[in-house]
Image 1 (cartoon, rainbow, N blue to C red):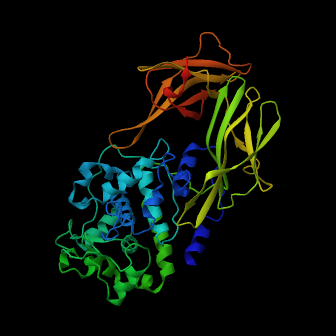
Image 2: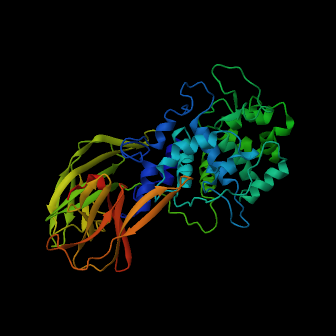
Length: 524
């Protein structure tokens, strides 16, 4: 009950950001479409939440007997990435520097948890979502989907271009060194105790990477010989504290035979056990403390990085919008997410205004793929959409609204603006398939001041960080009309990369539209 009440405090209504906002749209998808439709980077790939369903799941050993879990790895990765932060000079923090081999090669970062995590989550990075954002949201999901409190998630992290300086505390460090390390990262002694307890509600210490702390357990149900921090090591609860206070803990960093590496014992006991006793006595206090501190940990970023607002879901979200110009017609494809509903029989109507001042409407069918979900099915969403809505291309579209069972959803009167100033034109064509030579035609609405039209392609560098490349489309020397409302700007393509179209109208960047590749063009 407490976790549900805490959720209501963090996310009282689904009415956060304002559409259109491509960054928050992508972050909303990452955060709230965890499993099911629209959860993966492409239609055939799973969402991040799939890899902690159930919470005992471990990607590298699906037998369930490894003693490890993805959730524990994800939390450890986020902490180790953050722990290099220096609040004095603003360097380090959660910036995905942990993905660099040089950083993983340090004694403070032993083990394969980091690569295991990055291999699962980094494929969800794109031009609007950094690898660091995916590491942060993975930690959020690990807590939330495995019994923990909801955690406020922000996006906008910037991926590091090189390793950060060392700074992760190690088990053999003294208490004074631990206090100093956490203080450098912006956490007090009490917060240090709390943060360690929160993280150590999951996982344990693995023999292979810490043989001086954990012996080979020779246990067929724990094949990687992981001595766990508490008895419920794949789920969040306050057992890390209650077992410690009761004296029944098997936490190897508390009761290990090597006193030098009993760092949890030193940390937990550093205030006379007052903090751990309070957590043992109150699961609610432990959960609320972890919710606050984990959010702070994930928001610890290099100076100069501006994080977004807390990402909350829109009650009705149009997404995956594609509209193209086909001669005199505009062809429109759209998905619409109805938040926190599993009703596939709702009457969902899309209304749109055009440049002639008319209002048009169409009823949207429920998507065959159905629903998406978040936080272990605490929240669900139903997807509606249309595959090819054809309407007058000259009249075009300016704004959408929706009614859901008769209730109007229009962003408090703002509507959902749609730009149709720059569109892909189906007059684009291919001269040759091998080698590729194609002409892409971009339809620009007459009367708009298009100061620049360009193609964009998103690739990934050797570290997995997104890189956006732009190719300018030159203005025509003489206008070529598509219809009475649009003229064509053209350029040739010699590759088969996916491109979107963007533009600057009156010097203002407009949202890119359309994603396609030359092999899909008709023959010239």
